[in-house]
Length: 130
Image 1 (cartoon, rainbow, N blue to C red):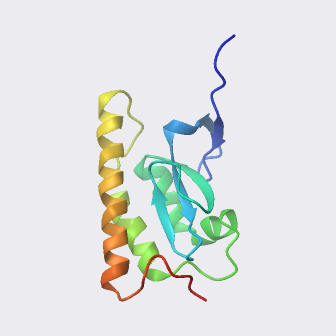
Image 2 (cartoon, rainbow, N blue to C red; image 1 turned 135 degrees about the vertical axis):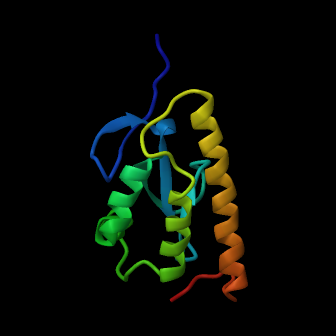
């Protein structure tokens, strides 16, 4: 019997793909909205293709991301800026194989940079806000 492969829907283009082909964006328990390239971070998550087109679609309509993450308030500007910086690491269209793995490594670096930015802004990423 074949192994079950989890399927998720991209909130930008509404197409269904395997969980590993998409990037998870999570509303962490401390209140920040961050990319979760490992897919293991705690919090409410949603999925987006690892392409510039889908990511810009989501960031162009922040209400889409806010609704998917069940946020009562707008996404903090620092978090939006970090996600916009992450877009720069993505290709314009879908890729496969080793190139996709290289993009995932770039996403991990960007996620670490986001955490550093939050810490430099004076906020403790481990403390709840609000």
